Length: 424
Ligand SMILES: *Cc1c(COP(=O)(O)O)cnc(C)c1O
Image (cartoon, rainbow, N blue to C red; front, side, top):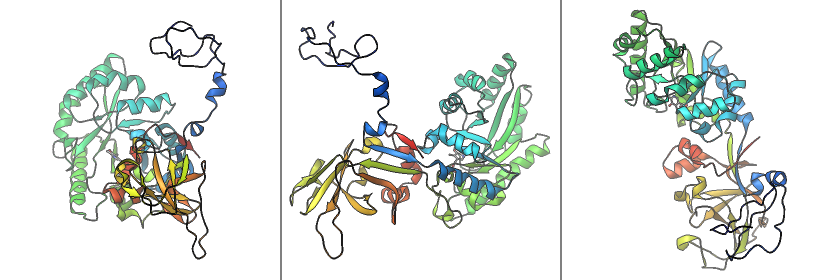
């Protein structure tokens, strides 16, 4: 075989073969490379390539969407928000599950997220929840993706591009009622529409706003936004403009405030079984869809006072087994949780110890037996849970979020694509 500069010889010819490293670049390979069947190789599951994965319980998503579907009534539509790869749960699978459980519409953050859904054979209406770059307009038209609109220049360019292909230019108008992130100011919607509505291709399919404090126990700012939105909708109607599908509620508002459900609610976090705030916990029974799993790759008794992991922030108290699992901060297990989270093994909690590394971390098992306590000794290959429920033991993304002073949204979306998603 000819020399390859870095010594990597790649797959052998004729479609089958092994790859191999040659130590001496100038020496021709003496023996024929062993052959492997690429199909057999492909059949080795992801969870046998690395012992760490996420499980996504699609039944939980069915339950959550159906529950909200029932709660809002048949006359209110439901938009399933599947941005950020379905909050880390896998956008295509979650979108299809939601649509089969009563969702009517899909919401995403980016053009590419919408294209990924179309390429995953999702056929429902898709709204991008902000205004994408004008350069992406041909993609919107080709893939039937609706943008949110709030600049006249974008609206006209979108309309003209659509017209040039003999297509319509459907969109939703975003209204800024106080969050001050995106949208036409609530008291300028009629003026905005008079600037753009001359264009025959433009089609106002919906009008929406977004609440900054729907999750908060304080309701004053929420009420101001809701009032401004109703006034903007009324002003459009008074000007003879049909606002289309009127929508405002995210998960928290959809659950807490029936009066702002209007024609559609936008269900994000609650669809995945996570609560948007403390306020909704008593109001709906959501089932979390995501759990985080790993298998023990190493288990060793570490003598008293020896350290574990980078920096040796933990030292063995003696009589403990230190078990290693192949998941780390590059997988989205935040390093800030080092020495401050647990894992569940055989229905019991054990402390994660030592700094969480990029690709691995460790937990501690007390080997002493006292009272009626049964000795537990994990072996290599045994499965543990980092997030999820086993018997009475539960670790939630909320537990982790509280420790990190953040929200469950950030943790769910933070699990990297290096972790396979297994659908149950
Ligand atoms: C992300 C998002 C939602 C969903 O919010 P949840 O709190 O996850 O329900 C709704 N609307 C807009 C505009 C969003 O960006």
